[in-house]
Each structure stands twice: as structure tokens, then as C-alpha cells.
Image 1 (cartoon, one colour):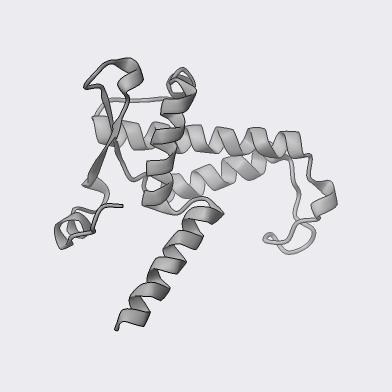
Image 2: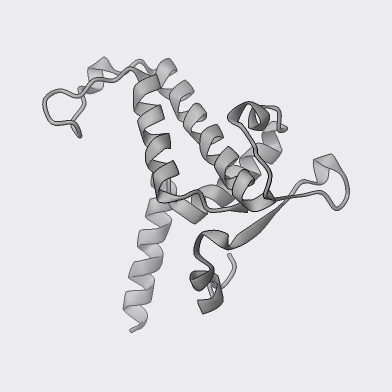
Length: 141
């Protein structure tokens, strides 16, 4: 994992990360940059809408028995493609759509997604890694 520098932090959304894609050629690279907070919210809304899960009373509470796992997984994949398209659009400075992203080879898509996920902490595992990192840093101080 690369060391975070002050320069990287100050770059904000313009910080770019290379994702190697040797499956497309020896020196092939995709360049990604973090999706914006608004785009992350859009991805969450897309995931909830496509999964068909309805809140019980509180908009943050859901009835687990009402979850159709097939629809939930498809919704999660759609949200990932949306976020990767935004990260590629920002990083490569050309418009990428979720439909374009769908055509990326699966192993390369997963590599790109892992980078995007680390940048934004979208999945529970990325959030857990971030929490562990913060705990470790607090222990050093």
C-alpha cells in the first residue's frame, strides 16, 4: 500500500492512481481518480433503487427478509460499474459510461474496482481497513 503524502491529500479529487492492465498490452494502464461525494451518494441511491428493498419505517432500517439476494447483487454490481465509470472519467479525462465499463475484462475491472474502493471506502472491507489504519495510527501517537 502506498504511503500517503501531504501532496496527495491536497490534490483531493484530482489525485490519480494507475491501474495496470497487462491484459490489454504490456504497458497498458487505466488511470482512476476518486469519484465525488455526490457520485458516491448517487451510487448508493442506485443500489437501493435497483435492489427493490423498501425501508420499514426509518429510511435507514430494512427488513432482511424482504431482500432478494439476486436483485441485491445485481444492484451492487451496477453501483460498482457506475462508480468505476466516474473514476475513469475523472482519471482518464474522457467520458466513460457504466456500459463502457461493462466491457472491461473482469479481472481488470476487479483490479480497478479495488483501487476505487480503497480511495472511497465504499465496501465494508474497505471501511474496516480504514478503521484498522486509524486505530493503528492512534496507537502510535
